[in-house]
Amino acid sequence: MMRSSQTKRWVLLAVRTVGFFILIANMRWWESALGSLFPDEIPVIYPSASLLDLVWEHIQLVAISSSLTILIGVPLGIWVTRPSGRNFLPIVTDLTSIGQTFPPIAVLALAVPMLGFGAEPTIVALFLYGLLPVVRNTIAGLRAVPGHVLDAAYGMGMSQTRALIRIELPLAASVIIAGVRISVIINIGTAMIGAAIGAGGLGHPVIAGLVRDNIAFIVEGAVPAAILAVLVDQLLANVERSLAYSVQ
Image 1 (cartoon, rainbow, N blue to C red):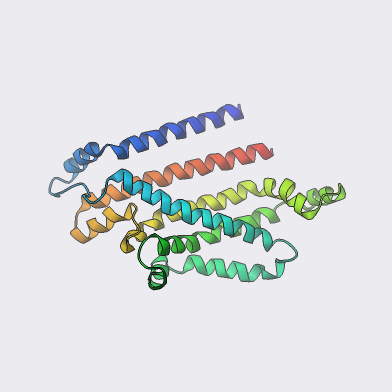
Image 2: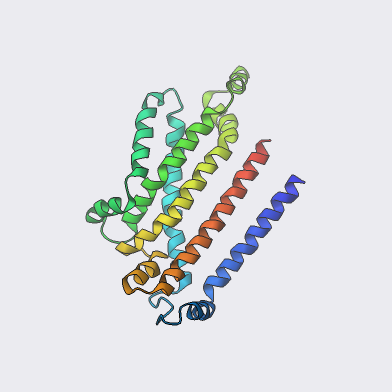
């Protein structure tokens, strides 16, 4: 029953994803819909790039920054729960907290003089902004592993590294994925600001709409970003449920 429910969720997600890409690929539908909603706006479609290209640029920004966040955040969270890094736990927690409380636009302003305009400073800002939930959930997940389970593993002759790989990480996986889920969804929305420095993505029509006072442009950028966030959230939720089910 559980496996059947999981399969249905994955199939439903696949259908919705295909529908989303069909929707953004058909600019005539957007032109017709936006023209009906905003008849006074001319033009109603952002002219500098197709919606499909903008979505692809947005996905690249989020994918690269989130991959860096995971590659650094998860090992960092693991390290501060080990005896060798436990003393650094308060420092790591404070630094990652600062990374999220510091406004991304401020990070962009500081990064542009060093990295120039484009995707690089945006990726740096998204990486820093998404680090906190990944690190915190990794720490929380590993700390939640029952002590008697680890004692049993060590009693069977497992080393700390082997127990981490075979016991701790599988039990903590769903909590870690929950942190990744929060981080990625935050980055999908925050990546919109990258268009201000030429990083591309769905922020371009939004910023152009604000500059030109064109609501149609704003809707053209905001609606696909919202749908993309929902689809990615469902994807990671399915992964989280699958991991929880496999542990059970």
